[in-house]
Image (tube, rainbow, N blue to C red; front, side, top):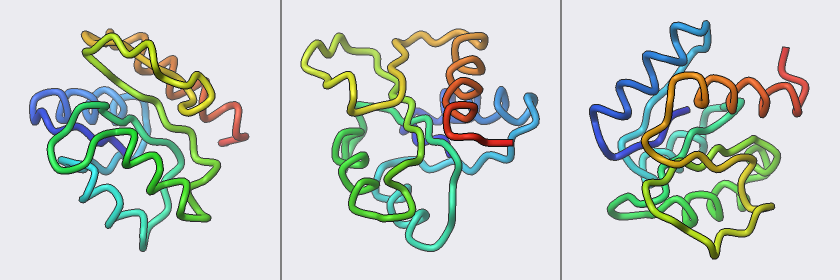
Length: 117
């Protein structure tokens, strides 16, 4: 799943991951992402930090409250320096602009850690 409020970045991340062979669902904000995971399963999340309505940290807390999402890797993407981030809060933190290689490697590494086929 890609959760990004910027439509051009959301589309770019989605296209990159689809070209790598992943099935990708995209959400335009945290509220939409939390609604989606109430009924569907995802294997990994690429999550923007700064979004309207619900920021990335709040989305992560919502994921943690959902038993099926607690162990799903969450890759945080941010354009801001966020020194107050707990390194254990997210599986990986990428800083914008994100290269194609960095995005793909982060997703692959996170999925390998949880035993994704």
